[in-house]
Image (cartoon, rainbow, N blue to C red):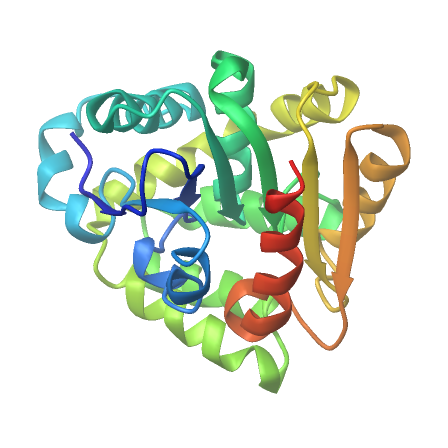
Length: 259
């Protein structure tokens, strides 16, 4: 079972489940907890191999990781806590996991908040993934992770979120990183399917105006999907919840309270 933490207000309150991205942990939501737990019951999870779920996941090294497998880990936690339905908030690769949960068990998803959503890999990001697969077994994974972090979060004002993710990624095992990175081999067909099929679930995309790799495809999705809305935070990069937490909290909480 994944490591998880809850903040409980009462049975009359909705649940919000936070899902971090690859290389992170539930600690990346530290700027959200105070604001969210005033309005919702909150569930934080550490994905397999991450944070306090790191040592628990060693026995799964022989498994082939998939987004479906990771998503079912989270659904198992919901069953353990007794959560029938929840709002989901995710960042970066965590948005793919949330979208996958919506495919597996849509009745468990009240709404989705997708921050720094990964909904398509452009030519530059596909090249980065190709380079990563080319050198992943001969280059220390932290070199690759730092390279990706600098490319995705290049500006000075992105430094806090960049350093946070690098610090959390250092806690990963090399084999664990490779398990997660190997999932990118099949990511483009999956993302194409997500773009073509809209779920009947209210979805808020919160993107930074400087998230140049991932903002354009989200704009296209929102123009095509009737259940989706987009909020762009100015002077902000890929990790909105860390770089502009007050704006992120206000926009996302307002959206969730209206569902």
